[in-house]
Picture 1 (cartoon, rainbow, N blue to C red):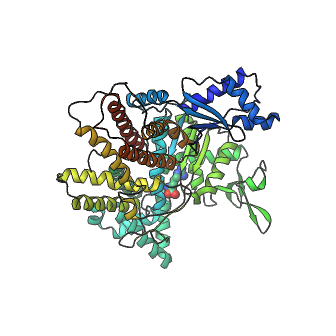
Picture 2 (cartoon, rainbow, N blue to C red):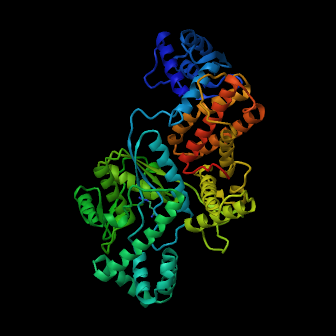
Length: 583
Ligand code: ARG
């Protein structure tokens, strides 16, 4: 990775120049945003000069005098107030290019210290409608898990499904009185959700129904065999259908430890917290109050009301003895730390649950947990009109509906463009393009902002879309199909044309980009990188004939095509998007 090498060379130059570095200081090298001065840039001399009260340009000169980058750079310059700029040599780029085509990670290095990271994502609730939040969580979580694994971490994915909760009182009552067996067989999730909605409405209108639902719930919680069987069947049917969707999406989980898995652990956990004085009894409930260790502004157990800080405790057991979402999450943390030795846990869950996670993390820390816990939040998805996102039939959208519709639309497009493909081929291409389009529309967005969902835009062959990138990939492959005989790429490379150089540089930066994604858990950095790569490739392709070239020039251009093809495939793969050889 050029950035890492340049950083360590800079560090060595500081030492050689006998410049004493403050303890917290590491020279910072970045990919230059303005490439007129160089490919990489560092503000190290300026930052340091400020700390040492020295002249930045003079300091920069001292560093450059000692800098040994002859094997990498054709030029190093000091620009503006003291920026250090590095221009890579054609040789260094060519070397890097041949590494990319030889390496099965396309030149992306693995981390020096791998961690065990648990990624908690998707997590829909059984018998409750799946909403857009679950769509975002599923795609972002899957992509982050892939990236972390790719760069060498030990990743454990866990689908913490909401398979226990008050909804089961209604579901069991509905199951016993109005279950439509045929509908259940056809589409279990849909039938369970509409049953839940119907019973919920009935219970709201009729106190007696509400009471029956409550008593069904109590029976379930007390271990009544019939109710347990119904509950188990609901979970089984839902997971079976969900797994089918995940399969279509190419998403897998190492575990499906839903909320119910932790039932037995909840009472002892609450008892332990009371014993340790972390929790107290307040109005009959067991709660966690602020311990006053942080400023009120940063305290998740306080809330400001009319200029006054009031207690906003985290409830872990209700007065009636019931446990809560937070209790389960605390037990889940214990399990992940103890059984899986998690160094980090990532929760890919919508922004509305921010307070919940702040309270749970703070409580876990008070219980001695040192694992790094991160809430990777995201905003909502809006319809093209900027309002709540609905399907064609006007219902709120869940993952299943979106995926079905995306594949159907991609299939129609494949049909219109008929290129003599068989039906099976068209089905497979429609699945890849349909699921890829939805995933990419999500992953190319900044996760914290709301985004507008537009079928036309995401399925378009133009612009920052999956079809555009998949098409760029197909174009790289078609060159190799047109070549006669097998190609053996040699390391006889000569990078001379500006368009060749630009592409080689972009390809080399796949490594930095991939590592940067995890700094702030942002797959959109990768999506945007791939889009820029595809554009750089198109410019190269316009400027530099490949098949008509000869000798080292042809070899270089073919190697550029091959490397582009690999980086596109690998990068899209990290977004969870499969590639296709034709479309
Ligand atoms: N089932 C929850 C929901 O739909 C999400 C669970 C997220 N994970 C967790 N450990 N709390 O809102």
